[in-house]
Amino acid sequence: MLDAYNAFLYRDDDATGGEGALAGLSIGVKANIAVEGMPLHAGLGAWKSRVAEEDAEVVRRLRKAGAAIIGILNMEEGALGAKTDNPHFGPTHNPHRHGYSPGGSSGGSGAAVAAGLCDVALGTDTMGSVRIPAAHCGVYGFKPATDRVSQEGLIPADRSLDAIGPLARDLDTLEKVSRVISDFGDGHEQYEGAVLARHGVEVKPQVEKAFERALAGLRGTPAEISLEEPNSRIRFAGFIRVSKALADDLGGVAKSDRLAKLLTYGPGRSIADWAEDQAILDRTAKRVNAILEEHGFLIMPSVPNPPFPHSEPEPAAQADFTCLANIAGCPALSMPMGYTEDGLPLGVQIVGSPGYEAGLFALARYLDNNLRAYRAPESARGA
Image (tube, rainbow, N blue to C red):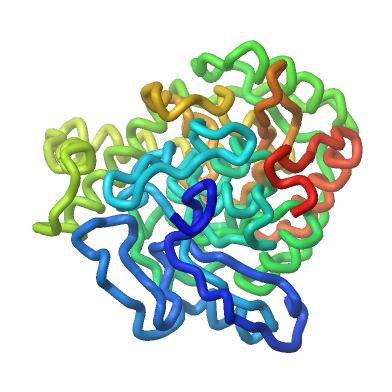
């Protein structure tokens, strides 16, 4: 184990950066994104010995901007899940509480940033896999719009939903890196936004209380809107798509029993049920984009539950809110919004329209200044 959290699986302590906008920043990379000469296994035991032959496009951009790429981070096997208890590489621990999940599938990315092991980490977000760890680890995470960040050099879970995105301990660093790796729009239109009024998600009381405080920190009162299906049904339709895509891509690659079971759901779906799933995803994408066009942004809890122990089953609803941005292809940002009574971090997310990334970050800064919710975990203070 390279660190107390099992966040890094490979580390190059001699890595150096160069000159540019990101000079001086150290960056860890999720194990499904190619870094020349470093492991590229996507959390799969069968690919433990695979080494990337060249950098992914996002990594090339980071190097050109002067960043130092210092290692490879733990993740869910195949990038499917939101716990990061990898059967081949071990669990990653939440820096805010050892033995607790950092979220997933980019759990190593969230933990490494929160613990101060690197300045920035790259993760991948299929239905929330950057923003869920950002929330659980008490840091900032950004998912670019799907078509505004390169997937070259990525081992995807589902190309139609995936986006590579950064995590950082402050918004300024997050934006600097986001501008380097993605096509970042400078649109700034301001609206009062919207919040989901009826979503069918069981939001834990401490999350709901913190979310109400976050809403009070906005400039205006968001409109209350609803979707055509419960969020859980939308998330399940997205899971079915990912399950089928991963099953097709991984084929005969050896997998754990857990992942093998998850990859039976998509291929085992009937033609009629598959068609219904895809119709739900299409309707949801249109509805979310229509909401954003009318109201400017959509604000929700990042995750409906606080961080949980590795000894407990993964809550099924963790991606019920985050999945919407992936299905709609939109940029989304998660940021700290408070803590549970026993000190575990909670996150709020803002979803915006492609081309208005600068406005999304401006709103996040306004909210962040009101919430002032970021704090380093005790284990990392002084790091």
